[in-house]
Each structure stands twice: as C-alpha cells, then as structure tokens.
Image 1 (cartoon, rainbow, N blue to C red):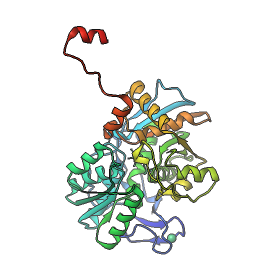
Image 2: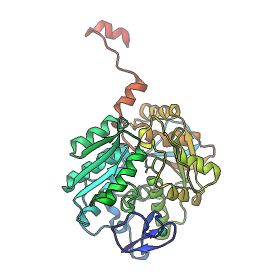
Image 3: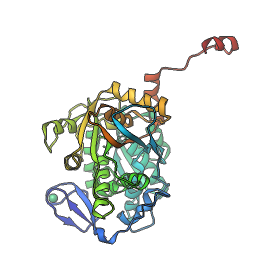
Image 4: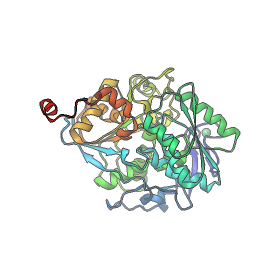
Length: 388
Ligand SMILES: *Cc1c(COP(=O)(O)O)cnc(C)c1O
Ligand SMILES: [Zn+2]
C-alpha cells in the first residue's frame, strides 16, 4: 500500500484525487511501506512493470511495453569519466522516457474512472499521452506552445487522436492553463506534478541498478520541468530504503543556457528558483522557464551532493553529433544535453550514466538545420563517383 506525502509540510493523504498538498500546495511524493516490497534485480527482462510491486496501481496496466531500454557503454567519445554509459530512452514506444510515466499515469486515470486526460507539453508528453490514451480508450487533450513543438512530436499527438490546441504563448503559460482547466472540469492532469506519473519514471534508476549490478557515481539528466531528475533520484533512494544498496549516485542536472532557472538557483545555493521569463534554446524539450518540480529536483541535487551544469546550444549540438556519428546513438537535442554536461563536468568519475531522453526522429527540422541538406546531383555514375 501507499500514501501521498507533501514534501513541504509532511501531511499525508490517502486519496488518489489530488495533485498538490491541500494544506500548503506543496508537491506530493508517493510513499510505501518498503518492508512489504520485494523486487527482483537479476539483470533480466528489464521493463517498467518488472517492478510493479513498487508502483502505485491496483489494476492491469495500460502498457505498450515501455522501459527495458539499452544501456550503451561509450567507447569513442573521450571524457573524464572512466566508464561512461548512455541509457537510450529514445527507444521507448513513443520515442521518449515519458512513456514510463504515462503507462502508470494513464493506468491511474483508468483506475479512477476518468474519461479524459489532459497535459501541457513541449511535445513529448503530448505524444506519449496521446498514444497511451489511445490504447486505453480515453480522450486526450493537449495544449502546446504554438510553433514551438518539434514536428515528429506534433505528428504523433495528431495521429494518435488527441485534440491538439496550440496557444500563442510559451510552455509555462500552457501549463498554467491546463492546471486551471483540470480544476474546473473532470479532466485528469498528466503533467509531471502528477506524482503517479513520476513513479513510472523512477524505474530508470531500477533498470540502471538491475543491469549494472551497482550504483554508478553519477547520473547526468537534462532538466526542463525537473520531474525526471526527481523521479530517478527517488528510485535510487528507494533502493537504499529497501536495503539493496547503501549509496545513491550524485544527481547532475544539465540545463540549456537560455532556460536555466535551476542552474541559477544552484549557483546561489538556493532551494527556490526565479523563473526565466522568455526561455530560449534549440533543445525545445527543456525550453522551460518555471519548472514545476524545481523543489523536488533541488532537494535531490543537494541531498546527493550533485550539481547543475549549464550548456550552450552549440555544445548541445556538438554532443548530439558525436553521439550519432561516433557511437551510433541518435537523440534529439535536449537528450544530448546530458552528454554535453558530462563532457563539461570537471571532476573525474569512475562511472556515470547519461540519460538520453528522446529519439533523433523527434526533431527532423533541427537535424536539417545543423547538418544541412543532402547533396543534389544528376543521376550519373561519373558525377557521383567524383563526389566520393
Ligand atoms: C520531457 C523531456 C525532458 C525534460 O524532462 P523534465 O522531467 O521535464 O525535466 C528532457 N528531454 C526530453 C527529450 C524530454 O522529452
Ligand atoms: Zn503541505
């Protein structure tokens, strides 16, 4: 069994129907009686639902076989990390780690007998939610910042049958609207303030431990709304609480320079962020100025003796190209921020994992911008031979 507990005032709630603390508006965590949970870390058949005893659902999951993503050892890219790995979350069903959260969140929506799910999104949340809503037979409504969503993500939300509404403002405003709508109508909110969604995402930590058999020194995570870094840290902390290990990794958040409120808070040693008004970066998935999970993320970062690194768009693109051309790992720009951060990290590490959050195919326009178009020629062997 589980409860929801406020991270600010510690109030506990036995109802599934809340997103934030009704006393102080704080974020909620799902907490369990860990002595009742037994997980199997035999290194085989990794998936989100392999760890279902540590997930807060009571019915048969709405699943498209998420998780079980490959953990690649980096072989050619040089860094200060002796054993550097990349976990390719872009190989989930909809092409991002959001599927881990959505399989749990949409299952919860079904359990609560909700008919419509809603989210604000920079793209991947909407793609994933639309896909799982389709599988579950629920209506999906997504609110996007107009003109700021990568083409692949938009295509997914549309084709999987969501009602897609583009607002003439940024992501932060879209989320504000979605929160108000969810209060007014009976719509189930699936952004990352939903504590059940984050429970699915914590399985990234379980899988890393399951596959490696040890806890790495550090995890590098691209940070936008800051839910994922919080979820992964929770997963590692639970491994300690359940007695599987006694260490947690250092959680290293990576932000883009133009969308860096958590970085700025970290530099000041603060636990509060000041929102960035007009966030801007090529990495649209982390183009967020007022991350809703900032408090959870900063808690994870300070508690684990982690850090926050900021990287410029040129460093992100460089890391994206290196991953693709040297290691065969195709990711979207936000995902490459984790490697860009690892390359910039000044301390030496024995082992670390970079989370590659989303697939290369998500943002084809960016690829053409940074790689250029293919060379066009006449269909003539001699002409082409000269080019080679
Ligand atoms: C959602 C997303 C992120 C950011 O994750 P948060 O939990 O919002 O910090 C990073 N990269 C990709 C590809 C994403 O889809
Ligand atoms: Zn509270």
